[in-house]
Image (cartoon, rainbow, N blue to C red; front, side, top):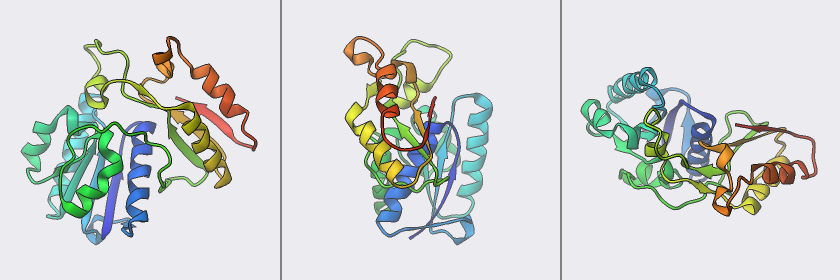
Length: 219
């Protein structure tokens, strides 16, 4: 199946898209550069601010006009699902925490609205830039009471990924020729907070000890 994708938002959302498209490519699907050439259209959305949300809704409406299978992923899915349904009633929606099963949306035409307890590491990647690896270190936000921010509602309860798995993802990326490692999440400072304190300094020290010539970016 031929797939066209648009990606918006933060580094974590770009990582989600790279993982999703990597999984789809591994399953034999082809990524194309024009919606006219595709069988399925996917938009990875951001909803962090109202102007951004408005832009996402505009793009969803325009993609819906092609009359093809439309998959809406990213933060607008749990954040503003009613608005999506109002302009694209047949759109298939995929929760950010269900992105590793996006193949079900593409191949079976089913929505994945509920989050999964999955770790987004160890999956194939379709990288936007072959020398940059965007590696998620956690999911969700530990600050649940911020009235001005929608992240906790769209990304869910905070969960740190195991340090060993992050390290292995970095090692694999370096072996593949990556020169920049971007460690990312929605709540970077809280990495490892389940242990009673932030483990971010420990993680960076561990990654910096990996053999190879590469930069580390945190954010």
